[in-house]
Image 1 (tube, helix red, strand yellow):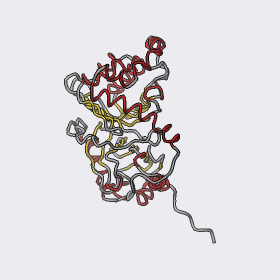
Image 2: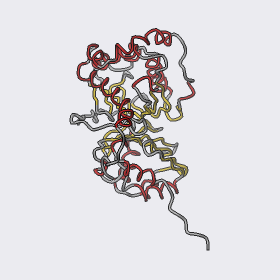
Image 3: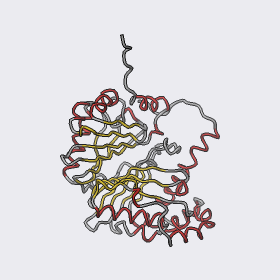
Image 4: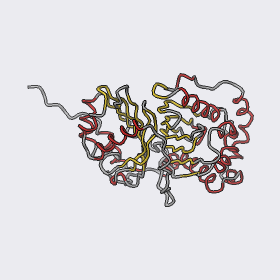
Length: 354
């Protein structure tokens, strides 16, 4: 696997693809560096949001523009489902105070791992969202698709519609709570290629992701450690031995979906040497409950300049992995390397009948 490709694109194509990421990066960096309303005004947020203030206010007074059954809660506790649904409901209603009430005032860290932006205290995060959320148009909605874990820690897959940050974002994030059920660590992972928002790794990309702040059940930690050890060893059989017969493997960045242990073993045999979570990758943080959760990993050296990714795990009643979903920023890979990853899902050609 190699870094950026030499593929050619027109300046207009490049500008169009960069728009969504530029918007999100500019906004979050302004908030992280200054933490002030003035910084967001400089980034053009407040002026752009003025015209949308009236419809946004109306959005707060009505029901959510998506049904509650959109969220898969089959592998999470009712408590964490209620917490995260409430958090996203406040965000979608553009209720900054309500949204920020879910975060610990004493000990909050938010990081966008794809952009490399970190906000390391409640006040900085609050100074960003307080002017930003009310500036969003009524169709700016954010909602969870899946929650896996409990009120100690969880993985959450969610969508930000384009009106939030410029392009649609489909993230798979890790959330850690304190004993008061307040968020103390939230890290977003999303694929810039799938969002048509190519990223770069800036010189100030965080080296500290607050990884030691872990509050995961031992069952999911053991499953994550065993799986990543098998992946790092390139051992397809060992990986599949941890899985249920009907396991589903998903790769959000490579748009890959594999069903069943037999197919999974064939896929890992072909793919582990090239996957960014294969040999050379290492587990750095875990989250979740006996029903599942996930783990963050440092990327394999061959995936440079990619630094990190995230894998969600669902566990069955026997503790076996029944579904795993990986996400990482494939926009950091060249087109040839990316297409090679996508092609690994194809089964080998069969010999002709004789």
